Image (cartoon, rainbow, N blue to C red; front, side, top):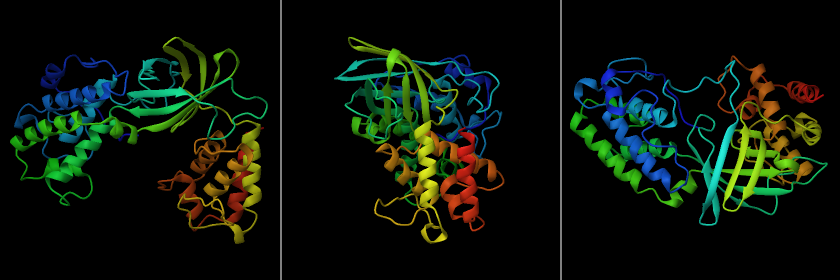
Length: 370
């Protein structure tokens, strides 16, 4: 969700924010708690640049170990410290399995709110309630869930960077067009006094975050449960196994295995087969995908064929369903030397991709499901 930066350490900064790795405030457990938590992030970032001598006036794009720090790096480093990433983001590839995320929620205004500790390397606050049914398509063909919960998950650190960029826009409308925090930081007309004022104003803006602001920045989440409190949580980052789910009184408790995504099942196999049948010829292949799929369309891109097939097979759609994730993995393996922003769309639109490649793409996905 957020751009990550490399790590730097400076003695005076450590004195300002406490021991490396220390969390000055616990991870927020409610949506309302995000506001104060974010305000503390801004104060911590400001403390990292206590004097002009410690301000890096030439942010070159990476936050390397140095004696000075830029505006952008101060904000990101402050978020990392708040989440408990004293040494920066956790590498995506690690020989050490990630522990189960332990999720503990309590009732807030008729909804269950809480966190699972750092989740996807972020400070995620969940807000969920019981639901009557899954809206994004059946997971299994052999059973229906005993319970369904749905709601939202909010990266508590995201509003800080969002408001930081908007504040730059309000200070100098249209002046900084690309990396706004970097360009503002490097602007020779921005004095240290203006930087200090920027941090004060940013904290004020963060404190004005409303419940509607937080809801608008959230991602949808669904949890389906079967016998023994086991099930699946569907998130923007994939589908993961849930275990030990219990709901007692005003509390909810469960674990999530974020080390690996749920494997494709029989319905996922049907989805791939149906998508393959839809893209039967060049005449029905949409070579200009924009990931906007019209239900009445009679031509399909790779992505839209998978979406259409998912709706036909399961009655709903989720863009991180295991079938789609597997196809993305195969595309990524095939195109490691290409700079794609959206793997399925860019591969579909790539002039070098042929219908034969699409055929083998789906065939490879089916082969991996055996």
